[in-house]
Amino acid sequence: MSDYKILNEKSIDFLREYLNNASPTGYEAEGQKIWMNYLKPYVDEFITDTYGTAVGVINPDAKFKVVIEGHADEISWYVNYISDEGLIYVIRNGGSDHMIAPSKRVNIHTDNGIVEGVFGWPAIHTRRGGAKEDTPKIENITIDVGCRKKEEVEALGVHVGCVITYPDEFFILNKNHFVCRALDNRMGGFMIAEVARLLKERGQELDFGLYIVNSVQEEIGLRGAEMITQRLKPDVAIVTDVCHDTTTPMIDKKKEGHLESGKGPVISYAPAIQNNLRKMIIETANENEIPFQRLASSRATGTDTDAFAYSNGGVASALISLPLRYMHTTVEMVHKDDVENVIELIYNSLLKIKNGETFSYFK
Image 1: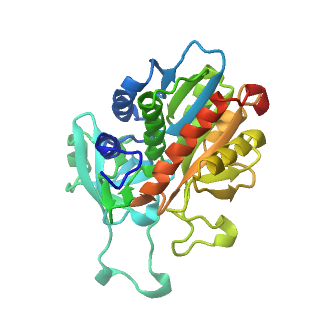
Image 2 (image 1 turned 90 degrees about the vertical axis):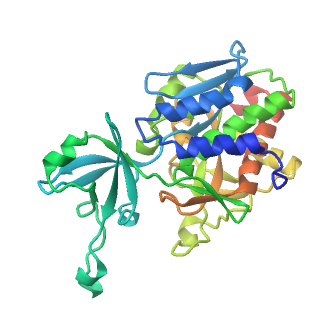
Image 3 (image 1 turned 45 degrees about the vertical axis):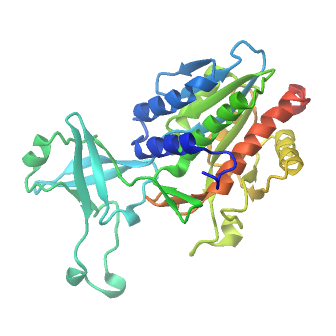
């Protein structure tokens, strides 16, 4: 593990287990159990809500409350229709990409356990070439579970409403890139858990309550964050999510900005970002020689930051993002240096609040 500044063997084992477990939107419970089990030695207590958001708390009796947050859910599909021929048509659960579906293996989650299947696609020999060739669409991608009749599919326990995930698992590419489905945004849950670990292992005591929040249902509209912020009523929220590495092909930098994995955390500018809090985070990065990049958003960040910022009469909120390649595919990719630097930036921002930044500064 000599290539890591912060992470250790236990961290990577946790990351592997956490990512390999399915955690589709609305069905995050098993992943939350893994996350809470890892976090348990580093917090004083847990809070969970009706829909499954999990919160580890340090100093629960403190007057002022700071949230660090990621989200736990991954994109998936729902069974929407089973044809008489035994083929399954789907609808999205979150922003699932129909273009990558053909030839992918899937797991259908049923009361009888996992039913395996594949997204089929017509052989190249049978398709029309040229401009008239059909492309994958939500209306024409289907899952084959090896049955030829609707009744055979139903006998497996598959029914309308069953959730469907990809089974692709975590691996490390070229020693310095983490690759898996669902890095968006279980990397966020992983990184905030590592912040809690560092606080404990480095003996840092905070003079405020720290709420380490792993929200559910971000992928369908920031719903978990909307619920938990009303319950916690924090004073400050530092959210971490992913953003696009825009150096891969077919991305317009003039539209998406220039962001690159391996070049550091991304600090956002948007109406939801409280200016003094962002200034403090940038100062923290400079003081600790943490490289960072900048991203401008127009109306909204599209992350849980927006849910926290506009809740409870306004919560000082900021967003620290992790550059990611191939978002919403099964080969999402991040650089290990960025992961460690996001952890360091959140950790040191908390210490800066502790060591002199008053909460009135964020008003």
